[in-house]
Amino acid sequence: MMYRIKRLSVIFITVFLAVSCGYPPTEKPSDSNTDKTSGELIIFHAGSLSVPFKSIIEAFNKDEPGIKVLTEAAGSVECARKISELNKPCDIFASSDIEVIDNNLIPVHAKWSLKFAANEMVIAFNEKSRRQQEINKDNWYRILTEKDVAYGRADPNADPCGYRSIFTLLLSEKYYGNKGLAEELIKKDTKHIRPKEVDLLALLESHTLDYIFIYRSVAEQHQLKYITLPDEVNLKKPEMDSLYHTVHVEVMGQKPGEKKTINGSAIVYGLTIPENAPHKSNALLFLEFLLDASKGMIIMEKNGQTSLVPTETPYYNELPERIKPYALMPPNEK
Image (cartoon, rainbow, N blue to C red; front, top):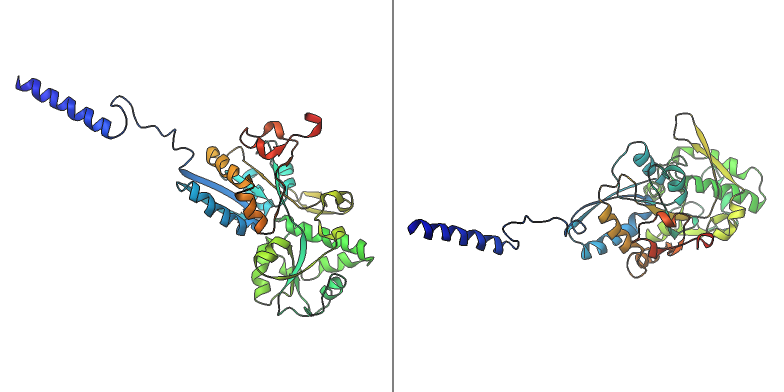
């Protein structure tokens, strides 16, 4: 009799503990309900996205506090190389040039890309910059050629802002009718070239540089003075791509000694989830937040980066179903 009482007591305690833990004694706890709200999220992004993405991630973590977001900022070309050549794990790649994704990652390392923001090129400076009281959109190129004035730009081999700075110079030569202008400025101040455009900010702050070619959004985020450039020069208007396409630059290819040509085009930011993404469910959660007009994209707009959501993509059929609401199918596929 005592044995039976002890046995019943053991069974009762076992059942009680199992129920108090929230699952039947025959089942194990499942991670399936926490996959999307815990773990990590690895984002590679362009340097020009550092400020808005910091705010977006903070807002996202209020909704999803269990997800640890790890970010790595670099020139977009360099980010793509980390994925394609170094096989570094990445859940989301946000590039300042969508063509970096299209030309370097698709179709092997990614299956789709999506446009999400726009920008424009400006020339930024501060109150200590030489000739800053005289410079304007009509004389800037003459001031930048002066020997006592130093300017900086990003590396075209690592960062889209680098080759876009050269596009701006080439288009300016045509617009202002100043033959040889681009070559003169491309050869000048090469010691100040940096891997990404945000690296130039410290040189401007320390007065090593007087002027920098940079995105308007970055100039505004850092409260810099800047001069705007004509639409024929600033790479702002997609409808002017036929003009922008008339200039090109050669950059380093994927193989040693290899060169590839990049044609001018309007500034369009793009993103993707790489094929090697280790946390795809978390990536989808973040992109749904980022692309929402009342959440992530309103933060992008406040930081000077115009929303392009929704927009057409030739990769519509390859998009994850949860991302399709933020895209448009091309007319020829409807």
